[in-house]
Length: 336
Image 1 (cartoon, rainbow, N blue to C red):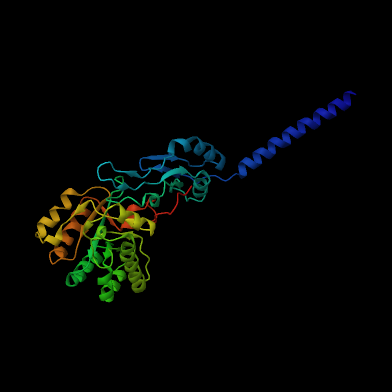
Image 2 (spheres, rainbow, N blue to C red):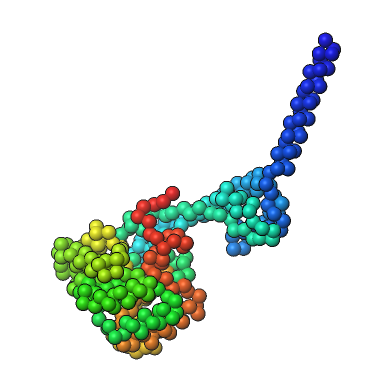
């Protein structure tokens, strides 16, 4: 009996020792982060993860995940303007994606933590409201150029935009686009975005719903035929609109875009005054409205330089309104 007990004890000890050896073997085989690797979790936060195993890094990231998460900023309707201010994506830490990046990093590398965007409610659900600006958390501004005339001033404006590597959003009157397709193509060739400014430049509130719809759809059809581009933004001529106009545009699938900074260049107030209406009043998410007058090309040069000097990135309306800064997209529904 004693021999049997001794034999059983030896088997148990052997199994334990074998398991310990196997655990050590597996631990030694577990991949590790290279030496001198730093994980950057935010602009002012980083962690030295040199030599960490995948398990150690996973445990630490799981503890940090809640702290690093950011909720989405939802769109809101401004009490003063009655316009909607777009939302912004939040984020959650992508633990496994971060580990994957860390394990393949070379010695001495700085690895950026991976995040998954958390989308706010879609801006399209607020399409019955006008848009006067982008989200104020964005250090960005957009240039909007309404075109119904001023052909001789368009080319110098396009040349300035190309030289400054800036893309604008051109809202075209359909009747003008039909008459000058070559200029429309020149705008498209510069990589610019298009918006809809109705077909015959009317005061839309004076029209019935059917006529408003025709003005909008006819214009987009012209732009599509000439450039192949779909149009998702609408701006009423003379900034003249009522809820009927907003509702028709919304039902047709458009976001109505106005502005927060109006150059009033159509009044020909002088280059310096046009510039003063924008540069000193610049703000995050600002939308600047201008037209191709004879004074605007010179003012445009100064406006772009003045805004850049203040640290603003000049973007298209699509980029300005996009909830995810990494994508110039406005999702039609909330993404999870």
